[in-house]
Image (tube, rainbow over all chains, first blue to last red; front, side, top):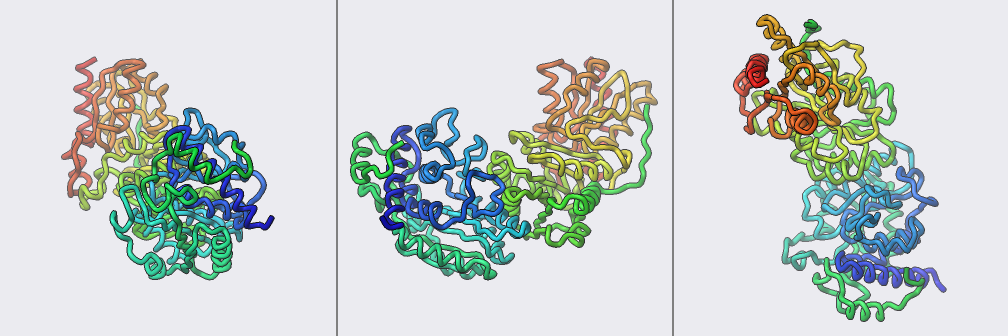
Length: 281
Length: 317
């Protein structure tokens, strides 16, 4: 089995995890989670240099910050299947007394999480701080962050985008999930953001695009290229073109599944489209 | 009563700057951030001596709070610096999620707190910050009274693991606490023992309380004066011990009575030892332009106001 086929198996199993998690509690955010599944799997299984176990300080390893915290289902599944905590714990998603809160948090001590997110627009600043601490510590590893496209409507991002370029935070790779959707509709209808590539470049970032953001092969190639561009005086932005709800036909190309769980029948249909590969939790 | 000498007027923000200078020399993990107010925060010496440990973020306070949270992950102890208004209300959600809820070891250091910022007026004065910050779970809230205490507090909070809000001011005020006094977070300081009334004050109002106590002594009233530099966690024991002796209390602070020190004490006393209390604080109002002394007079925050509050509370015993 090729590496890409192996990762594809993890992707399919992650989709199943996401669908089953949100179905069980009839809440959560499947659309954006499914759209970023290939990205998360590629990042954690192939792109990032990670140490064994979880160390909050992240010294000597790459770090990842999820700014659009509502896509916690994909984050939790990938962390669990990477070994940060027991896969069975996915069963507790959004339940009382769980470490798997609706939005990710350090507050309950879930391994793998370094910051709370959910209130949008804060993650890039945090990633910048972590990246600058790495420089102070002479740590050559990279800091990754992920942001929704709609999330860029929050002004704090643009403070952070200006700062990262101005201060040459070149050990940072911030990825924007460009699925063109947000809660109230398409991003163009809600608040058009214009040419994001031109905007990031105007702020002084090195920008690259991954046109097929749901292709593991394209993500691996694009993120390796992004890594190669670090350390050259500019922060790196990856514009990741994804399809919200990817892998489940009736959830694709719509914002309808941003924050809605499938019913029993829909779940069965969705799971049939994604047969188990690694075994369900 | 115990007499205190003014060792020479100085501003509490310079105490912060002096504390940062010392931390720069003694604690390699301390880093400073500032949102375009280096001169106001008095941290130029820290910057000159540790340029690699200073982050100038520009006029972007939200970004500053997030960067500070991120710096802690690599083991740094970030001290953020801007005016109190821009350190709290402007960035409340960033502090709430990225610092307080995330349990990050950030020291939010806020100058120009209260009304004594003076001429800039109400857009820059904040009288709500203690309330905003004390409501955040896990946040320590400190408001030292003079230069020496602010310097000591700055040094002390670096040793404490967890988020802290350190509030200080702009004007030069009496510097009267001992230069070598150890700063213990959450430990009230007995300044002068008395038997008729307890005066509990924080920040700039501590010195005003000592002046009021002297005037009251001349009238035959024995006032006990306590310096509460840490509003949260509150030293309930010290307050209870005092009011059990005196039977009434006046709280004094440069802050709205809603959400301030007085409210914390009233809440504690209501459940543990109901006691007549008067509040020297602003009365749910914004400030305005004027000199610090004029504003303290107009908004009832000086020694005269404290004296008046004592005479009133004594009638309610």
